Image (cartoon, rainbow, N blue to C red; front, side):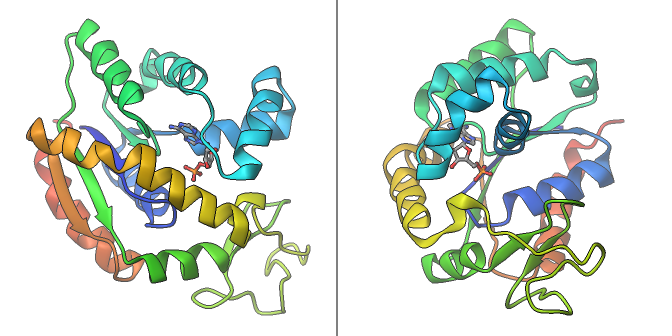
Length: 218
Ligand code: AMP
């Protein structure tokens, strides 16, 4: 299974990538997670990426392409992978194609998660997480028991800096300008699978899991 999860921020790619990779025992490559980890550890890469991320802008292609190339070389990807949040630009898609091609591999499918703009904004602005245990909550759909406190650690929950309203606006603008052209790019290559992402995580997972079953490792 070699698939890409495509879609605007907040459509549920990350949640579904976690579930699919657990069910099908394939690797998850999330450039957002890798970059956030680098920021947390204050590596050179993290320090370079932070300001772009805080502003809701894309980290330069060369940086993320390097990260993904390194991950794809890892033996954990031998059984397949789900790419979550990469590629986000046409040059990234082209780089991915050539890395895979050089290994004699190709993508099986690109799933395009479709969710209305109104729902996306609601999903993103309500997200909170615990910095201690990384548990995630949503103030409307999965609220903590005590206001803005983690159920497990009782630590105050935090909002991702790029989930604040000005950064959300920028991320959606960046998506429209730089990432949306990938829908057509993969459609033209016969790889695109549009998927309704508007239901609950369980409903979306059920549909997605059926679509991906033919690509499971044997
Ligand atoms: P995400 O968690 O996928 O929404 O990513 C969070 C942030 O990380 C994005 O807003 C970008 O700043 C950066 N980022 C993640 N993936 C990429 C990518 N493929 N290309 C450029 N920047 C990225």
